[in-house]
Structure formats: structure tokens, C-alpha cells
Length: 243
Image (tube, rainbow, N blue to C red; front, side, top):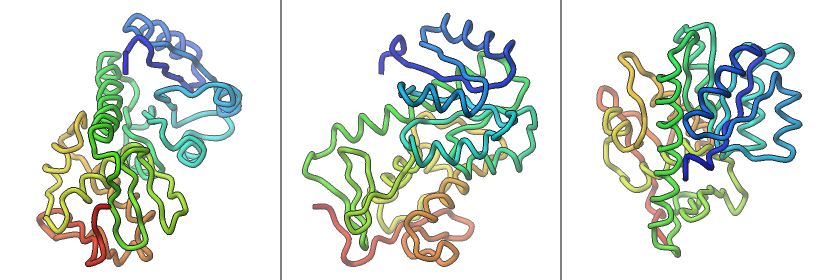
């Protein structure tokens, strides 16, 4: 994706911050639109599809967590970078659980925000590039599921299962490394563009989100199993394969 053509939507109720981000990100070569709340955002999305949404957690009316949940249903492919004046680990984890691709506490250095934006977009572009390079006839199958590598879609018995770009990237890694124990560090390395932090439960949160979509009982997973002290192992089952 050409950075100059990348369109970012900033959803924040602080007019000064909206103006600052619009000016700064425009200077970095991005196209920027802004919205002050969920209602304004919905009107914008009715006619536009941005490449990234920067979403404030604390908004008047409908809060950012609720909006993120809706976006994951209505616009699952659009990455979300969540902002919050509350920098607690709990807020960060909850934000990732509802579908945010990354989380940045306020106040923040604009250069750090820029780095996070680039990382999220690199992850999404890396997934798309890997998909384009795949055999066009190749789908991964496990249990009742079919992972369409070209369209980046998951189907269960021919019914679509909505995935975010981050969830697709993680599931793609698992199906391409079946029956192997993958440590959290390995998963971070394979998820290109992912930013590490000293205390990071993001991988665990992403696995939990993915389990909710593919496991009949996420508390007793069949496909993505925890190997305590080592990481995770994907067990596709005897009927799995590529076809």
C-alpha cells in the first residue's frame, strides 16, 4: 500500500487532538479524516472505507470499546488502533479482546503513534502479500473450517466467520505450522510488524479471541492448545489438509 494513498480515520472527542493528528499525519503523507463520536464515524463509514481507524476509548455517548465491537462485525478488515487516557494493563487487554489491533495510552509522543500506525499497516500488508504469493487453488481445511488464503476469509461449513486482519494472520501461522509448539516469541516474530513491550499479553489475548471463533468450547480447545510453559500448538485433526 502506497503511504500517500493510505486513508486514516481519527475518532476522538478532543478537537485540539483531532487537529493535531490531522496536521501531523498529513505531513507524514497520509490522508486523514476525523470524527468526534460514534455517530459521526458511522456517517463517514457509510460512504468511505479507511485503511486504519484511530479510536479513542473514552468518547461521549457510545464508548470506544462498544464502537470497536461494532467495527469488528461491520468492518472486520479495517485495523483499529485504540487510544486511552487510562494506561492500565486491564484497559489495554480489554481493548485487544474486543478487536483492537494495537493500543496506545495518552499522552503519547506523535512519533510513537506513527511507529504504531506503520507497524499495524505492515502487519496487514504482510498478510496480504503472503496471501497473494500463495497457490491460488490452495485452501487450508481443518474440521468443518476452510481458510481461504486468497480472500483472507474463514468459512465454517460454507458460512463465513468474520476475522480481523490480525486474527487471520495468527490463524494462517498456526495452519502453516501444524502440530508444532510455537512459543510466544516465535509468534511475535512471525507476525511481522508486531511491536514488543516489556510486559505483553497481546499474543494470549489474540489466541483467546481466535479460540472464541473456531472452538466449540473455548475453555477446552481442540484446535489451538496451550502447552504450559512453552506456547501453543495447532492440532488440525486427521481430516485436515490443503486443497
